[in-house]
Image 1: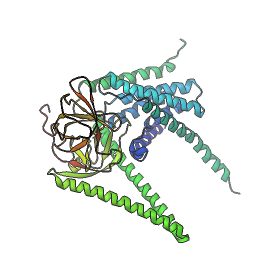
Image 2: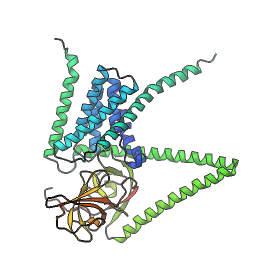
Image 3: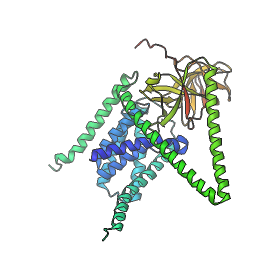
Image 4: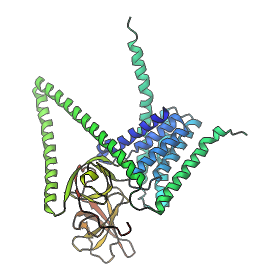
Length: 168
Length: 277
């Protein structure tokens, strides 16, 4: 069931990234929705979920991109696993702490992703601190919001059901 | 035995997965030729998901548009002021339609102006990762699309077909970091190679230090790469700097606004035979 949930989450993130991204920020969206999904899985379900979500999502994203298959997968696997460990070792139940984890996770992902490409001599990047920090900030905002929404919705539905109550 | 086996398992698994990734990357870096099977298969499957999602999004947008229009009509009956507002909305829609018609007319006139056989296509999805500049078009092998076919608009060169699926294809935009095209300065005929650069800019490499290049020069395809036919507009020279070596550092602003393209033409010319294949 958890695997199915992970799979659906990844597909939804990919669809959002590829379909709705065209309508955001003039088509040049800076948020990596797939990374948000991976970190969400890691923080919600632990390092193993983060590991698998990162591997699967990263490989699919690589296959759909124009780069080397595995670099995005490796970056997301590491970030997903580490985010899962942080989620189990520290208390990240509040929005500010989650924001920090998402922000640092996105930063680490950018460093790993760009670093691997540069290390292998496959691509050069114009170092833009504002671009990397901006992407991390946007990812953190979206991630924190998605988490808040994920917690709010089930409770709201439950409250609504309870509010209706049985009719006598 | 402070650490039990189950506690270590995720760590081992992590190492195995990382190792598998490293092997996967190594294999590609060493023998990277053509389109990997995994890439083609994944794209073929996911392009159908993208097609479906695009249809759903369009449907929802249309439904939403219809809902808004219905509300406008109701409001129109209630007050003249809202009627005027509705008319303005309609005017804007007409303007948008006219703009799209003009864009399609431009594409049509471009299509008729040169001898290559072309095919109109629509962009149905953007790239899956923000770091790679690719789009998905709604034409595939069934329509005669093949790898390395040039994709253009009335504005200029868009990119090349990277992975042709059955009913959709992945197009690598010219601004992608891994994209390149043989190019020349239209005025002085100085040759070089245009590659994707930061943001929405291109960089023209291997242009000799003694070449005649000035800001504002038009950069066109050289037709030497076997993908892009000669003479298509790539962009305009934005800056020329002396790098100190044998070549100049030239930045090119693309003539195509990659954030707003919707309709493109696929140039149906077969790429030259690769002797290695």
